Amino acid sequence: MRGAASTLAIDVHGLNKRFGDKHVVNDVTIQVEQGRICGFLGPNGSGKTTTLRMLCGLLTPDSGSGQALGYDIIAEPEAVKLRTGYMTQKFSLYEDLTIAENLQFTARVYGLDRRRERVDAALERLGLASRRGQLAGTLSGGWKQRLALATATLHEPRLLLLDEPTAGVDPKARRTFWDEIHALAAQGLTVLVSTHYMDEAERCHEIAYISYGRLIARGTAQEVIEASGLITFHGEGPDADRLSHELARAPGVETAAAFGAAIHVSGEDRGALEAAIAPYRREPYRWMEANPTLEDVFIQLMDKSRDNIT
Figure (cartoon, rainbow, N blue to C red):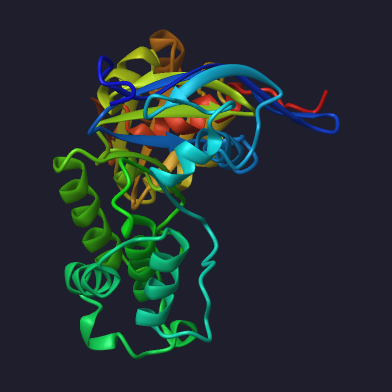
């Protein structure tokens, strides 16, 4: 088997991609072990989608090299595509076909054997069997998401690339989706999933943060938080959340954000932070040092990033 000696499902180095004067992906190097779920984070326009498309053979890098599932992403893109499932951000199936017809069409595209058996199994696994005759265009966001996942995994890929798969989906549908993703990973499937939801990022085994084309943070959620150097104070009291605008302007404060009726104040200079909150260290306010959240770090990384228009 190709790549049998390696435990890396993704192993790429120095990927670059430009569109006109925009350096969309800038020298990105990333490795993901087999069977791991890696969250791909970053602001809009940061290069996440372009990176995913290069990894699955849909786009050719301007420079760089690497393998997906042991196959060269530049020299062997067709081999990568056959073994990879890709779920786009926008629902891209045929809305005038039924759920079952969409899956049957996908099975024919991949030249799969046992098509009816595979389609029936996918419908059962994702709870779609009772809706098999429903037109895809009439489905709600959560059901469209299930159909898209069923289609992306019908050919039993070893790598699954998901581009913001739960955008606009309700919390219950998101949880059901993530339960299925973890079940697939437990069977050995490797998943790289882009997301803006911090609770989803924390459900990943590890995360990679890309901003304006550059990969600038990598590791487990806890490792990324610890590497940030952020110090955070949590403030509570009547209208504490309304202090955010004033505290955000204080020297040394990198972020001041309302969390419900409370406030999180973060920065890397402990002395400056304590000076900023000192005027409010009295009744009715209560302050305590807290662990930074992944969202605190996400905002810090965004604020420190440079635009990639050159």
